[in-house]
Image 1 (tube, one colour):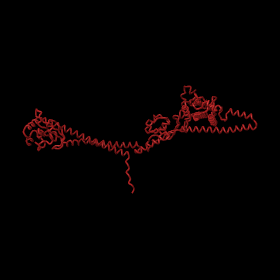
Image 2 (cartoon, helix red, strand yellow):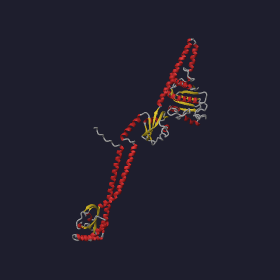
Image 3 (cartoon, helix red, strand yellow):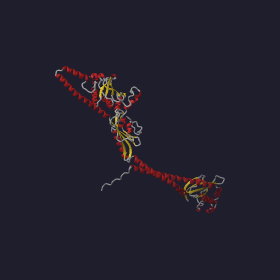
Image 4 (tube, helix red, strand yellow):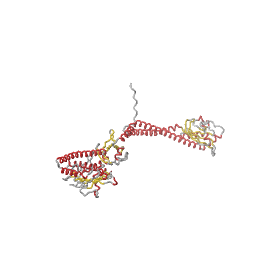
Length: 579
């Protein structure tokens, strides 16, 4: 035989329900008992007061006082037959019959009964202590006498015209009568208790249902484990996680999300009013498509965000927004682009050098020494490598030569001529190639796209690069101006200049996330509409800027952008020494 199976433990909600029902039942029973006891005490006090009133009435009757004084003055006690037929018996029994009292007893100064409902007890001493009343005090009592338990009162009987106590009057009401009154009053008490118990049961069931819904049917141990796992996962991952509850409040805002968005912990705040980028909020709109990714900038970081509905069964728990940082990936991409550009330039240079050496060797072999010297002079004037970029010798930095040469090759393949402006002069060496690549490359790519899309027959992009020394031996500043033959920015042709005021504030429109110079809508997750915004953020982070000098006009010339990149080029003196 197998081992007996243990009983399945009750669920937490069931335990809570049973505990609540027990507490409600206990409270109702205690309340009912206390209420019944207070009612019983109230009825007892009312019986005592009623007995005291009746006893005072009988004791103050002049006939009773005179008769008690007369009997007390006689030696001995009259026989029971005489007392039974006497006026005291008639007065006491009349008062008892009128009020429904259990007894009305009159005694002399020694406590012997002069009037009593039971004729056989006349002339006998009372069963309860009469000393307090015979001493002149009025007292209320609850005791058990010869006629049963009662609540009553004892009042002294004074001699007529005197303060001498000559007897006492004792009146009592049966506690059984009090019990009958309590039984009549207990019905509303019981109904009230039953109603309270029923209401408590209903509330307990409703609370159980709400507790089960709020806890998703999980046990406390499961909730505790879930919380520990949530903390471990949310704080351990590099991705940002934002949880938005069904009621529109932020329920989760992990450390990675705080770092990426440069915000404090926003848990508990309203999602609609949270200081987060607008693209994030757009992901959770009712008309948003689940799973769509958006790319945006936040604090100099390139972030990709997506959102999904959180469901538990059929219950809507809200949204989960995921954030991924693509900044490092883009930096690696730019590094790879730079390496590819240099590799392409070196391969072309190797091929060109080989051709040039073959040419020089040919001149030397046939004895044309003067032609060889002239050929070498032309090489020195045009640079070691023939790119489709004229005046490359104005860029002494080999990185800029290679990069602009590669961009010239790409532009030439698209039918665009990339040329250097007459003010170009770079004497130093680039020390921040990644950022220079990002800014200069984005500006050139946008200009080439604009030139291709423009209406002008002569398609060109002009780049002017000028370095300026830094103060006190610090790294110098690189100034970049890029213009094109395109149709300009939307709204151009009005004499716009960013430095000229007037319409200059509209220049910031082109630096908004999602803006593309091609006029085509940016595709989600494709990286479009971020180039100019990223370039400006990188420049401003270094203390520089990227601005629009001219918006251009339809038919050309196109827009002109200017970038200032402080601290990106080595000191000119230092560069000359290196050469």
